[in-house]
Image 1 (tube, rainbow, N blue to C red):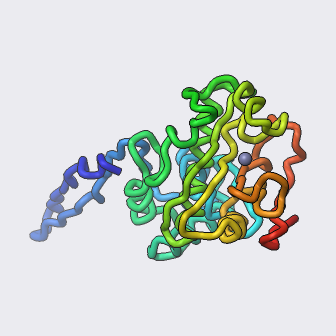
Image 2: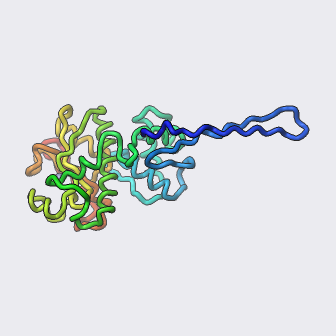
Image 3: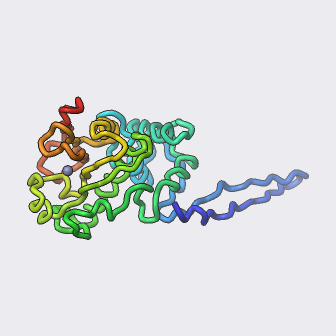
Length: 259
Ligand SMILES: [Zn+2]
């Protein structure tokens, strides 16, 4: 958001048809110059491109129960269904088409650095007090991109839990940091692909159950060893660089959450 006020003035064209006494005035739709990203066309099923990919990053948290939205730049049925859930959640007309009203809401939700309103790079990059995105198996840029996708899913989880704050106690970890805290050797935290979450308003079980709807293929919470004081969420199915099998792995036995 923030730059939304830089709305460009709509240009009006006055076309006088030869021989006609009526002048037709066509007002172009207001174009937004958003600080993070600006979409320039309405997106529907069948479209493809980087603008679709940018949309997918922001609606992946609305994938629906046990599903994921691939970040492949192709607007298929799953992207449309996610857009529809996003629209429903924010009180927009739910047609599964990403047009001006959907983009306006996304502009409102995103900060100039492209993070969603309620999460920041600083929060996701707090591993062992370090800063920066290096020291993991991916490039710093790839790691940061994963963290951004994680944040948009967290924004959806937060919305689903009634718009109350969620707290990230651990996000990206370098290898050194991961060793220090005793993380799994191929932890999703190394990839910027995971977050450990707590809440002061929802129970951890509510968080763990809710996360099943937000594109998180990895969920560990109460009842899973060492996860009684936070819920771990990650996107392992989309991670082709790790050693896991790109399948869903859920375990919060005290909450009825399992595979
Ligand atoms: Zn974790």
